[in-house]
Length: 205
Image 1 (cartoon, rainbow, N blue to C red):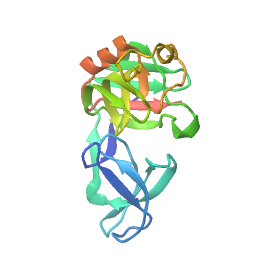
Image 2 (cartoon, rainbow, N blue to C red):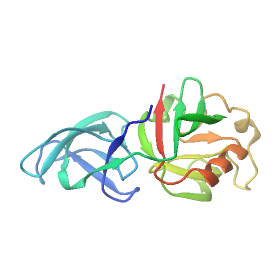
Image 3 (cartoon, helix red, strand yellow):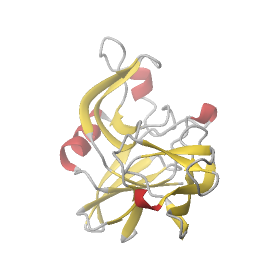
């Protein structure tokens, strides 16, 4: 169900790492991958201190294949008590404890248009906070939990006055967000309070 390990970039969870076109310091960047929460596939390790990896570019959302210094790669053993699977087709979040489902949440993942879709892949739970507000979208949310830089689990959104936007809350069960995974207030609070850092998150169709 969940792999035994994953390979991440050994930097902070919100630090960008440039993916190089060629295995050299002066090669041009072909994309950006963020931090220590996102799995990257290692294709080969070269003798010059670089490794070839495949991932997706944070800016374009396109699949990329390129090079990073091998020193940035770190293998993490996944022996956590909990695990999370997000099924985008069903718009559901499944919480596993010791390989058994203990919770099922209805969610809203990212819209398909404008590169708002939620990126599939293997991640880890990172930091969290009580609330945030995005002036860009005129929305905020409670109980956010990071799984890849600005991609978060969080509650249904509120407006600039911190009032829940009811028409958005009513969209749970269908794609509606700008890429994050929305949950009901109760479910977002449960995840915030109970799921520890390092928990694996598998997002799939």
